[in-house]
Image (cartoon, rainbow, N blue to C red):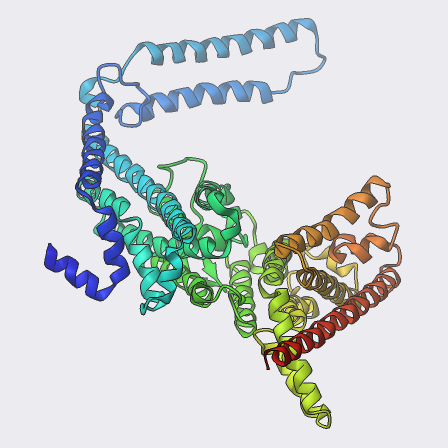
Length: 633
């Protein structure tokens, strides 16, 4: 044991530190006791569920079930036919009395038969005990699998966030940053070591879990698939917990509860997004559902957890590629999703761990991320479905995109607002950059063209420059697929269905104008956020979020309270997203041009003020530095 710990210490000192601090004899004993008691409780609970002498005639495992269910269905069908049978004309009281008597007789037969079913039970020799044991072991396996997911992801997330908060509060995290270990070693040590007691609890329960699966004749491929997806999901969620703990330090002690609560809500609510089964396969929410490891359990054991939620993953397609046709491709795709999203989280972790003053992703990384996110959204939008209740609609590209367009816009808005928060620089960073620019301009006044070119490159790729131009590029990347689709709508409309009537009512120019207005409005929000961050205020990031949120929400509330509808005034397009008002005005193009003109004037004025503020910051910083140097001399 000591040799193993020494090897762990040589491989990852942080992991050794976490294990040494947690694997105490008392803690291990408590965990082993909890695991043993829970397994004994499940095992001895079985005799209470074994079908006895009073097992229902229509119970799932009664061999006579179909006979009695068919008889009940026949009685109900006879009653329904009686209600559907028209009364011959002319209608009189005698015929009504006869009809009521027939209905009463049919209801009495149904009541008597139900009474018979409640008073009589399935004969013991007609109970299929072999199938009952198989189903019972399967239910235990499935419910234990669900418990593993919640215990690992919710409990592990809480422990990791709480550990980083405690390390930050005590100041030991600063020592870890100064240690010779790489950030990857430290963070991997946290992921593997902090939830070590939860890992131990699950590990001690795994043998009984596998025993239940084998007793239920569950294929070994399904067992392995569940464990692979569970491990991959732990990597993603625990990496996200680390990033949340590092970025949202201002939440203090509320951090662990908010992080673990968010994971709990995510695990519970995402299955509801696939209610209705086949309706969910063309829903953009699919990218969220597949990040929930419970979705694989619904796929492997449909109807066990809930008869109302039917897994859509068997019909899952990505750009019409049949991902869900086999277990291997589905599990591989789900693990790939966990790994890709985990990669982006680790990009942010490596940047933010040692240097808390830089943005968690660079500008060029933001371009790649937004492009990747568009592939995800449009991949889950363009899914193929075999012919069924919806006939050929799912073959139609316009129907698929039109059905998901507002969800695409919604998710893009969330991520674009997130990028505004992430990429906008604080006052000190912009001041350092402006001072460098000011000194560079003073030193080389004769190279304006070269200076402008380098200035443009810094705005696009620079680490410390304001992010307005970078956000504009991200906006262009996000709207490019929508622009292409609007242009190609007539080409895709082969079935001539009514799925894009709203789009046919507007012209190509109007649609393009709405997208330009959307970009200008988002740039206004980004500029306001950057200007607020340059103010001398404590927690300026919270001020920026609050002010931008107020600009987005309050004008719409005021106009609604004043009774001004979206189709009556250009102010709705000036201060709100144009897609909401599109098609509600009698002259949309003129109204949108007027609103766009107002937006561009506002954007130009704000950027002029922003540039002036940055220039003053650079000049004042340079003057202060020169004065300090003179005094020191």
